[in-house]
Amino acid sequence: MPENGDNTPLHLYMISVGKQPMLSREDEAEIARRFIATQDPKLAQKLVRANLRFVVKIALKYKIFDISVSDLIQEGNIGLAHAVKKFDPERGYRLISYAVWWIKAYMQDYIRRNFRIVRPATTRAQRRMFDKLMMPEVTSALEMLDNGTEVDVSGFISDADAGYGISMQAIKDAKREMLQTDASIDQHDVDGDGFESRALDETLTDGVDCEARCISKLDRAVIGEAIDGFRRTLDERELFIFENRLEKPDDPMHLEAIGGVFQISKERVRQLESRIKEKARQALEDAGCGDYLSA
Image (cartoon, rainbow, N blue to C red; front, side, top):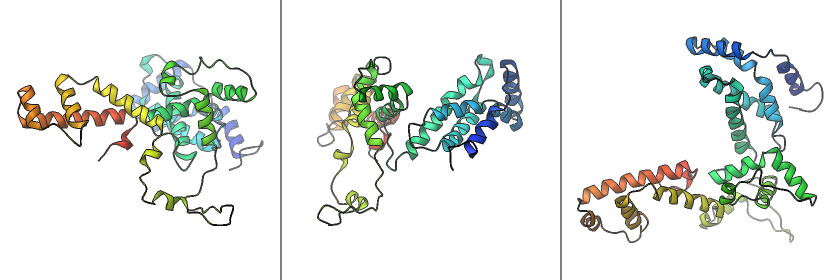
């Protein structure tokens, strides 16, 4: 769909939503209360229509990526509708103050899924990096750095970001990587001598263990941080089992031996180990590292 010009569908849509009447705080709260009581979809539509202009405004901020603004608006509208269903007017804030988080979440998830064939953000650290890339002030800072201008990054790169390995150089490298043209999975390249190289799908199935090459240092840092945080949640007995069983899969301490240390049965040790495994799995999933869990 063309998106430039005065008579494009996008431009006409923007004019249309700009004409939608906005609701006062009192009217919005009253309609929201009635919707909660009746679940009348017409009331939900009133709340959605009154806030569509904000979805457009947010979508336009993400134009730094080669993604259809119309598609982003559609995703943002879904997020807005989701927010309407969960909005509680008794909390005292306006709908858009709550909905903006859902709108951005739906848009950002769409970009992650569609910007490249290979998803660019799958772990917590990568998502954090991705979110930095979409901050307008970061985009401006990158342009200033490219022009040789010094930039104070303390306003948008925190100590916590640094702990994830995020710096302006890392952001710059990530942006360059993301803006590379996607390679077709069945595309064959021709080298300088005229010989056709293997396609990507052949490379991925050549029998080489590529896990160590595919998991970046950033991914491993996130996994390590998640495990460190998980260890701090364990009591003395659980930590002993974790260190002597789960962290030593090739030479684990026998269940009977652990039972002797704590004066508990072998079966009780097995139960504790199962519980620790489940807690560890949850900790990794919460950190966005679920893809690296063994079955």
